Each structure stands twice: as structure tokens, then as C-alpha cells.
View 1: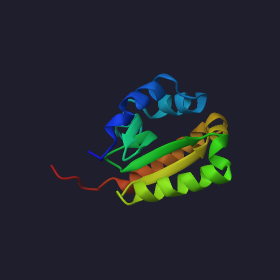
View 2: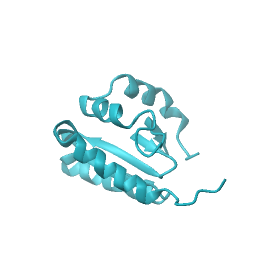
View 3: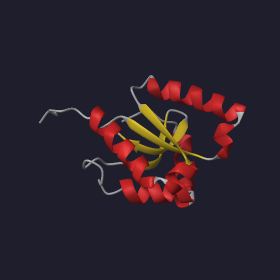
View 4: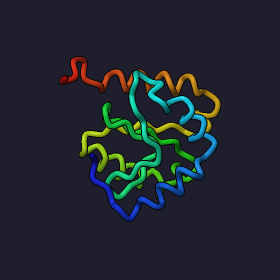
Amino acid sequence: MQPYNKNLKQRSCDLRNNMTDAEQLLWQRIRRKQILGLQFYRQKPILNFIVDFYCPKANLIIECDGGQHYTEEGLEADRARDQALGQLGLNVLRFDNRQVLTEIDVVIEFIFQTAQSRIPLNPPL
């Protein structure tokens, strides 16, 4: 289990109950082990962050980014966040909300390819 700030549990629950349209659409396509039989979790606290989607087996995080992520402050915060998560061996994929809403098949294919490259070929029994 990845380390997390217990104070984020309520906030993550609130975010699960109030997902953006892009998050809802992506969730419909990755939930219930639809990609390579991998389990994804939504609005998962890791360190002092809440990531949009997390797949522990592939050490993969998926973020749906709205406009606030493309400001100077947002880009810097995301860079620092991605670096901290990367130090845990996690790979962060970022997609613009518009891309998720208009090119969902392309997004899913990219997630599939990335996840496939990150799971062990011969997992231990």
C-alpha cells in the first residue's frame, strides 16, 4: 500500500461523489477490470495528494486535467507532484478533459499500452 495522509480520506470521498464529466467517462471505461484485468481505484490518496485514478499492479496513475492545470502555478504544482509520485515508482499519465471527452478511444488505447508495458510478464504465484 502506498503511503497517504489520513486527513485526505473525507476529501477523496467527496471527490468520488462529485466527479467531473471527463472523470465519469473515463471511469466507465476503466472500472471493473476492463483493461487487462487490472483494478483501478478512483480519487485515491497517495502521499499528500489525491490522484484521479490509480492502478497498483501497474504502478500507474491517470489524471484528468482541467484548465487550472495549465496556469503557471498549476503546471509547477503538477511537476512537483509528478516528481514526488515518480519517486515511489509511479508513472503519471495526464490527459486534458477535452481529450478524454472527445477522443476517449485514443485515451483508452494509450492507457492500455502503458499498463501493458508496466505489468510483470511472469507474475509470482
